[in-house]
Image (cartoon, rainbow over all chains, first blue to last red; front, side, top):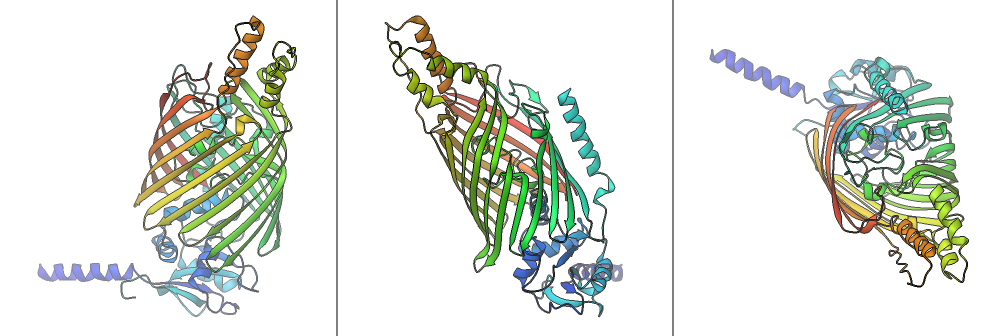
Length: 145
Length: 415
């Protein structure tokens, strides 16, 4: 009985650690963007800027609306809850200022889109990172920062 | 019938919101249809005092209404060229006058001149205050309805013309300048009946600075009354202008005082918002300056909110006060009866436009999911004698009074 209990606790700890993986912001390996600041990422994902310095127009992609990764990304990036971000984008959309980042279904969809288009920027769970994309910013979300 | 059509259109937007229009897209769409809506129930007013939270709404004399706060809107965006896009937005809600002029809130072309500069031309939202371009989109703001004292005096929702916007990041935050010009107008309900107003030229500018947790905003706008249509207004002016000077020497001067045509109004406002560590604070103050007494006032509010997960509780304190004193035309006992009656009508008409009221509000917003929010709000409003200009009454208020307003609404968007 005690073994099962310990196994359950270890499993729960693992799940808990797994759920708190870091988030990486990624672009195409050939992109002229090599490093971005947190402020630049905020401005891109809040619809304030559409290019960085002399780059082409940057097209941001988002995780699914109700995903935990999206909520964690905006909370750590802007310090605001995802409900604020949703209302904020409603403001921009319905004042004709900007359209919210397009959304895909999962991490690998972001990787697929970024791999095909040098103008696209996206963010993924770090565990899905591979050499098809380059990291321009990392958001440390777990306790051992 | 018009209410039925409004209800059907609001229902259709709700239906769209549950459809697959919000499906995932991996390619950049050239055309987008999005929408918003509010399904609202409000209890307000009394048998003697008509309440409306926008001048363009019919008054509510007690009981519950699903029309005073319900709204439905559809927006169509098209990317025509890499730097050129078009937006059309139609809004269905209770109005004094139902026609295309009022239904079509926006129809404009937008051109990105440089990464920092955008110009637009066509019909656009009037950008006078924090909520001005999205006051119909309940999901986009905290309260169950815009603060009456601050947002009600501006019955204008759009203008026809152009605007130019310049924005860029500077050291303390994100800076934005906007200038605009054109013409505007509105069809509203006042105590003297339906009133149609057209204003030109209309122009203005605003500046805002947004940091991580603060937003500051300054606004200036100016408009000149070009045409006004309201039967009692014209009858009164005509009567005043036809009074022989020997009987009432001040009649022509008073006619000039209450008339609107050709008079310019200026609007100045300052706003500040703070959002950090679950606290949301927002405040705006404005000053209207005009030789037309109906729009000569000052107003403002302070809103404080606190988030608890998906639920945000908030409280608002607000005021609006006319800068003109009540007119007091005491009839000389020797004045002929018909002139004394005209003096009484003039005094009543003038004093009924004056505003002097405060509201304290408590409310809650619950974000149900990424596109739906449920809100509830209670307002307690104190209205002073000769200060009921926001209300619909047969006579000017002869004593102080208080009103309670309660609303529950479901706000949604789809995109």
